[in-house]
Image 1 (cartoon, one colour):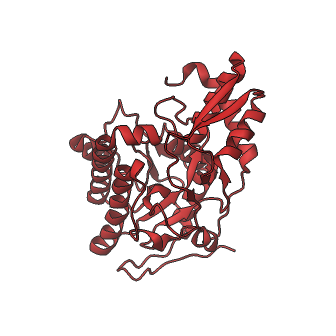
Image 2: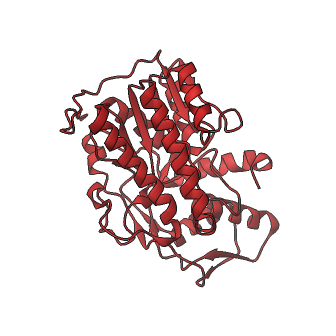
Image 3: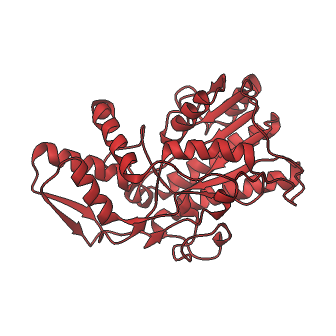
Length: 331
């Protein structure tokens, strides 16, 4: 059952409703994993004016250029999916970049959207905003109750700032903007590069290459024991539109499946799908990251949405996409 949520108590008096399919809808980051999925879903749902710009066409870290874009196109709706993202290695190596770049992107887009009267906006963050040792499953009110995971704390702080920015806009300007925090995502247009990818695309590439070359051993980081929740990007895209049409409130909404698996289980499944028959070893000198990250998705379910793509089916679809596009992917 769908539950429409309005009148949040923070000065916003708004009742969610279906979005105008003919209004301009700007997807920031439309070429990435999340943004491309949102763009596909909006077009499939009948939106006729979905716009996006590549980073070469519009540098969202350039404040003047961002404001000029909003002044010209005046979008009615915005999905802020643009971000600098990466796995443990990238986050650990370049924390300044992850903090600085993401703060600038968020500030420029959110400020320009406010000045140019964007009616409805959704800010997308990450489950890494929550404390490293948060009680599982992680509820939305766990935010800012403990220490962050050190390997991605800079990125997490930037995303937390985005949530607070949305809440501040609601309080000061009364705009019905919202935030959603997805769990670990995967799917078409993911980053499969060895240095910048997250765990699932990194494992897909590693095992597929090992199967192709006949490697005897695949070595993965850590112990394999951490538990992770994975959501296909197409499921997230569906949740984004649903929340924009059915939810309003200052608190971020967790978006996930409500179930998790160990990294070792994921590795075993991927090895089976790509027909890798060698050994898997674990380099325990490398960090594991957070022991478990499972989101409490009660608020999302109360708003009327649950995931529909199973992990095995999603991985098979993602592996097929990776193999089809492997020759054009970033290295």
